[in-house]
Image (cartoon, rainbow, N blue to C red; front, side):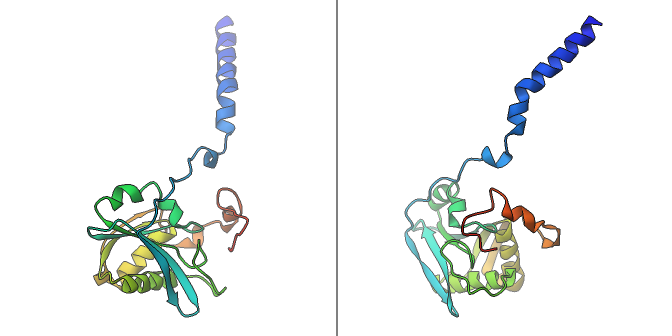
Length: 184
């Protein structure tokens, strides 16, 4: 009987100590991305009446293109850019309705965003490049690869979804996704 009481007390003590750590929201434990270094070049590409923001980092080596996830911006790549820019020219593109890119209110689609990537590549004279995409950026990279296989050397994606029907859009109204300037 004393052993059971001791086990029960130990379990309660462990949960009493661990409980607050388990109650912490997961997004509160993830550090913000590192700040991006000063870009070698930044600007916008005009597409119809809209503009798509881009910036480049590094001045030598082959191109590599990074595409952010939904509700993100080029700032999402702050932890990766410095390492890649040492030996590559890195292109970061902000999708329509994200960051400094404009949006005319017409429905967004991965096809439109993929076309925007091609327009920016053309504006910078990039024939083809590897693409790294996170979440929506991965979907965009895959569509660029499908529609323009000659423009993509390799694709690396993380968190991409082939069918967004399974996404609970209500989650975008909660931290860490919600923002004061939420356009979705």
